[in-house]
Image (cartoon, rainbow, N blue to C red; front, side, top):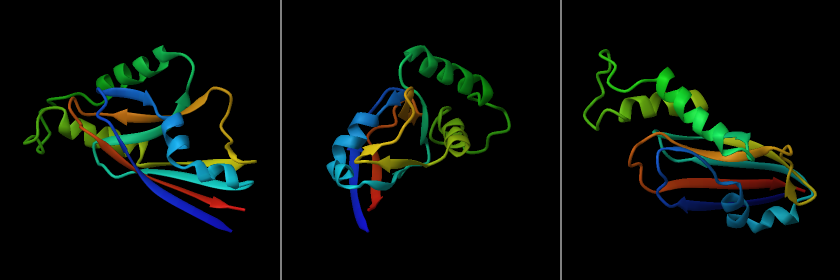
Length: 140
């Protein structure tokens, strides 16, 4: 059994949904050594999240952002956690809805994603800054 782990600091992204699959793969080249295993990507933040979805049509990512902003609006009158700005509490809710990690099978030294799947960084803050990921791969 092999186990590899690294941390990746992503640059600041604009608010929205961003494909980061290639950045994750480049950060842990040891994936190529694993014939059968799993990759876990974990984000060390509470106002951004990770997801797996459409990797071809960028309008999907735009629609995600539009829908999440309608589903979890800013300035809801019942929010108590407002000190860090109107985008902060909605960012925490969006992050909890999507989650802090994704797990992907590794097969024959590559991520075994579907044809149209990619890893998203879901940036829920207007100015979230750099984001840190822990990337772990294990298997045979």
